Length: 473
Image (spheres, rainbow, N blue to C red):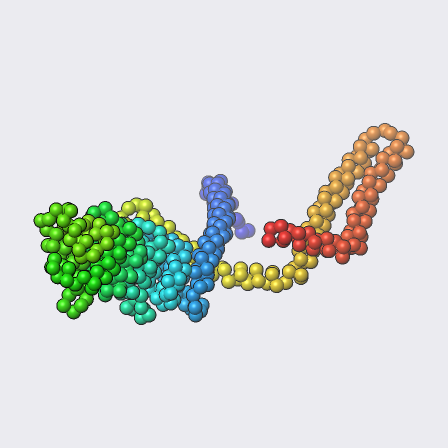
């Protein structure tokens, strides 16, 4: 007869002991269960995180798109492809500066307002952002200051490449002047836009010469719009009186024009007055300036500038080598921890914008569909609302029925153990059954009335929806 393996083990004095294997199996089962539970939790957390990320991304992307749309609204001939380029440039600027993508998108509005095309705005935005960062003011303010000064000097041209070269050079000169003299970038820019830029343009003066005079004047404590107004007035006055009083100017050896009839360099003009007024008293200086026909306000400006001719020449020479200053100062502004955190935030924001931009088109399509089909959607929402109410009501009814059934079952069990008369038992049973029937009848009547008055219910829901839309729309 064949014998089992266990019987053979018994014959040899052995018996299989599987308790260790059982314990290991139980532990493995428990571990796998824990792992599965943990995996479900991780999945739930990741799912929630993805939903939250999607919501945040849509919000960030929608804000960026809205700002860009407002800026582009005043531009001409901007199609979707160009709009994508504008958006891309704004995001790249945000990742290279302390300004957000939304601020960069807003700056387009001021660039377009200055008469730039979309191509010019794309080329200008990075330079304007560097200028703003170097000058330590807002991107919107930087756009106004730089474009206004460029326009005042007559440096705005249609050719995109040349226009950007002019703008870059102007930015470098203004930022360099800030590092040399006692005035800010904003004050130098304001001086140019306050008439002085127009005077430089009218007499074919280079921006380095004009800003050099402003720098020397700033060292005398006069800067900003006041400096621009005064230097414009003295320039116009000198040109006028030099032509009218040639003999007086020749008598005092003061030269305003060169041999070609053009206005001399400001440093040379100041030096000419320094020589003419050297060694005379303040009273005599006023007499000489009066003989030249110079007005009192212009006299005051000239007297303040006396002795600054060498400073003007030195400033002009340094400003002519200002190339790269804006980029250098802007990069220096990024050395702080706060600036680095701002760059990191811009990188994260850029990811959110790109992710959210993929979700915006279907969401916008959904909104359009809802708006165009409001008359159809309102009844649909009404149906959903009624179905929800019906489900809620049925759930409540079935809960009540369940309780009634429990009461009925309890009553039957109770009747079985008590020794009450048969009539009493019968009445208790009938009462419980009637209670259940009453609930069923009430439920049926409710459904019947709902179906019968369906049109009125839908109309009421439609009116309610209209009021809601009016209140919150």
